[in-house]
Length: 329
Image (cartoon, rainbow, N blue to C red):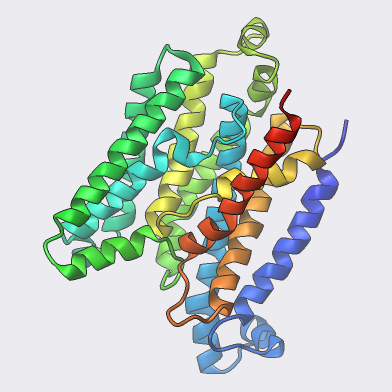
């Protein structure tokens, strides 16, 4: 049995390096010595503002959101036994996006700072409830189809809101949010999303042993005492809490939940329970690295994080298709 401990240590070391780099990088680069003095002994007033009010909460959010996406992707791939499963599969991200768009469309976001993330979380729970209600009793395939239907409905309603936007500014704000970003995020966003991600992550980690049994097949899992209905409910609920809150704060960020488990799985023994935590760390590394890249690459306006992750994630799809063609009988 291949231990995942060395991989966890390596990912933690890489994450620590990227976290420190994220405090340095930006349109205004801060020398490492000034970052250290700002963190521990107090630097200049300007450096303290940049580090504590801008870059530190942004880095923490990248780690938290990336971990939630990576973990959710690993659990969903174990539940559905589908290598292409990710949080978008069950309509969670679409529901969170729709809730946030509603807050922007009706002007609630301008009235209350917490309106966008709050309605995003509500939208994620609503989408998850609909997915579970439609797919209940029909097995994994019915759950996937229900999630696809909910995602399609959410996408259609978002497009409708853009079509009927009351003014150009509202349409611009909606499009800007849908492209995903961690810029202009504060500690308020961190404190809002962190409890939900911790609760959702704990629920997802608790499903590890049941997912190990499910990897043998549904019949074998049931013979080992796994309640499949309860397992699906836990996965859906945990994903809704973790990914819904993350999406409601950062916008739509794709491919992290898909790519992170695939990068980790070959270095483990392929048991779902041994992939969950390394996939969470890999998701945090990927998202934090992508966020740093958006600050370093200067092409006019700052490149949106969701756009960047899509650009680097799409080639992964092509690679996976080629790999399947080579291994197909």
